[in-house]
Amino acid sequence: MSSNTLEAADRRKRRIFVGAVTGHLIEWYDYGIYGFLAVTMGNLFFASDNPKVSLLSSFAAFALSFFVRPIGGLIFGPLGDRIGRKSTLTLVVSLMAGSTLLIGLLPTYATVGVLAPILLVLLRCIQGLSAGGEIGTVTAFVAESAGPHRRGLSTSWLMVTAVLGLLLGSFVANGFSVLLGEETMTAWGWRLPFLIAGPLGAIAAYIRLRLEDSPEFVALASSGHTEPTPLRTSLRWYRALLLVFAIITVHASIFYLVLTYSSTFLTKELGFDANVRFWYVIAAAALAALVMPFGGLLSDTIGRRPFLLASGVAATLSMAWFFFAAPGATPTTFIFPMLACALSFGLYASSTYATMTDLIPTRIRSTGISLAYNLPVAVFGGCAPLIAAWLIATTGDITTPAWFFIATGVISLIALVVLSPRDFARAAQENERDQAKVLGTGAGSVAAEPADATATTVSV
Image 1 (cartoon, rainbow, N blue to C red):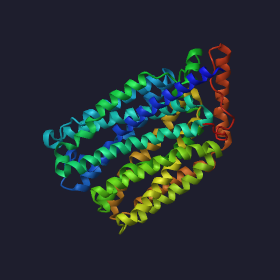
Image 2: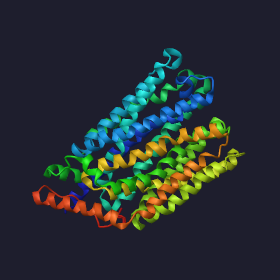
Image 3: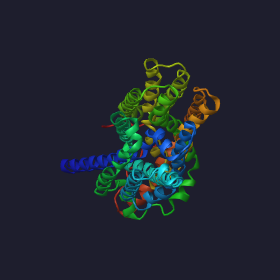
Image 4: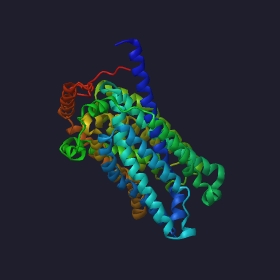
């Protein structure tokens, strides 16, 4: 292959990568800002004489959008396997940006009464549909464009941009709170973070429209070998789907502990002021994002399973420390368990996306990931703030959420013990059979994957 051809291929990969992660960052900014404004949204949309009831209602709306995510996966995951990754990604980011913009325009409970929370819940559900369709498609898109030998490193950048998107949401939401003050923020300032979503979404949609689809999907589509019934076929891969479900359990819980619920916990339960909360969340997100590429690279080198086992143990222990260190904590003492959670979260989450793509074959990858990922995120991620707030309100003990988070860690660790090289080999063999079909039609090739996709040597 000539040097010009190689350079053109590298430019194409960079273009795909930048387009995918830019859209992903904006998607997560849109989705996450509600979590950082949960207290304000509770007061404005869920009127109650009891502040705890308002907060629980706000978190319930937050959780509800997560239960819609599997439906989004059922809609957009198969679409990504049938019509392509690029078109589906453009559609979901447009849906997310539009619904987020409309939240910023909503009337509050004081203006229209019960209609306000109804409209808010409806728009949060639309956001959930979009987020459910994003993850499986964008993960397949990036993994297939990078190839099997660099999957850990390449897909880790999706997690980096997800964190940076939430970090951007935190910076904007908390930044406006600090600049405008609580009174102005409650009056109208809360709208600004949502309204910013409009122009950002338009930029993301434009970028994604100009991308080419992944080479593996293009080869399948050109030869007529895309899966006509991806949802039905995915269900035959029930072992892989169950493994992904369980592996993602602690990924989901620690993600939303560090990046959304901690913001509320620091102020409502520990009494830290807005400035301390702001810098805590910024520091935690930055640390998690910093270590993710190194974690992805390491999993490409030593294998997914041993790396995830070690980081999963660390994640479980750090979440326990987070809650058991809370009683009597000060901003000086609590920074250590907070950063321990952030570090272990960054390492564990760096390689979960690559593991999903290793376990599920190309022709059903968008659908399979959408199914297996969105369910644990709904149950153990989106519900984590609600469950934690409910446990504290019920028991009066701020340490009780620890047991919920420890349980999520145990579920993931059991799955990682059960995970075997045969699970990776089955998906690789399926891809090899699909490659043989494509080559038989003369329509190009799908990159063959090694028998154990976790035992590759990275080449950057």
